[in-house]
Amino acid sequence: MRTAVERDTQEDWHMPMWLGVCLLLAIAGFFLWEEHRAHLLGALPYLFLLLCPVIHLFMHRGHRGHASDAVHDSDDTDQGTS
Image (cartoon, rainbow, N blue to C red; front, side, top):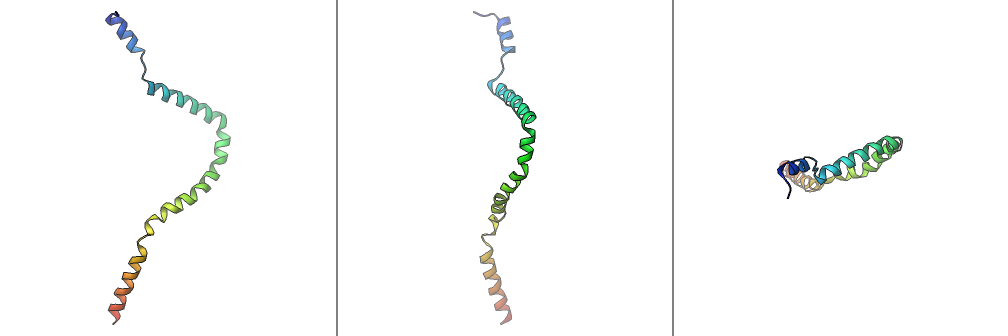
């Protein structure tokens, strides 16, 4: 059986798994950035070009209902001129 002092000492060194994984990913990300910065920054213009079609799709997402508005507007103007 462990004493209270042994448990406190062991709990002081206990690190949650997610904190260890985050620390490992931060260290790996730092070294990847340092070693491959030229490759990543060289690919950046191509990534912007690849994003253009995606942005285009999202920008046209709200244009679905405009055709029905145009029909209603033309009906209103026809009735007003008669």
